[in-house]
Image (cartoon, rainbow, N blue to C red; front, side, top):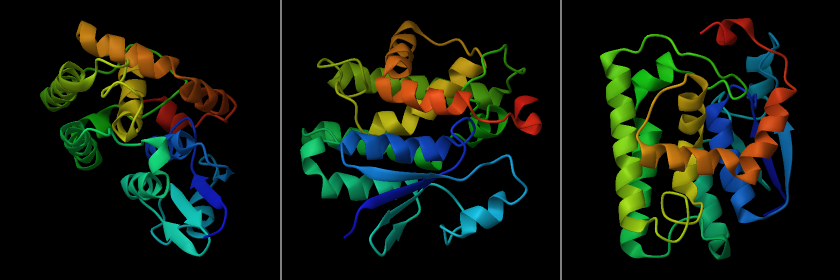
Length: 217
């Protein structure tokens, strides 16, 4: 395999790109970052140049293309076991995978109503019962993970893992729309938001052109 290339979308708006990028950063491996701008009418065509699915992120390793955030994270965990992208303890690892998979496949109401806008903080729109149910389930997951396996650090399983990469865009969403959470969840959100990698991502997001239809939500 050759050197890694990670193709991502907007740092301000692309939640799935953030997940893949955090997993890539966690490996410590060198990679080339290719950013596809979201503010241009050619966005879809530009993504298609790199991604058979028309979606980002995409990881290129030599001739291999991987075009799903969780699949990218799993591939990197296998390639870089020394980086400990998953918890070492089998029960913690199973719980982390379940939490990541639930994020990957669920919480559609929250995603639709509260899209990621990394640099924005404001009072959110009136939330539906479905959105509040998603928030309640997410914070329940966070509390359970922290209680069972969070003693060795501030993240869901102590050190930063793929599970945290999967939920980092949710932290951004809840922060953006000023969604209140319990004390345990707030402490977790504060730790994620203060992570150096989130700060680097935020610097990139701050420099992007605004997209009015997204900022109006």
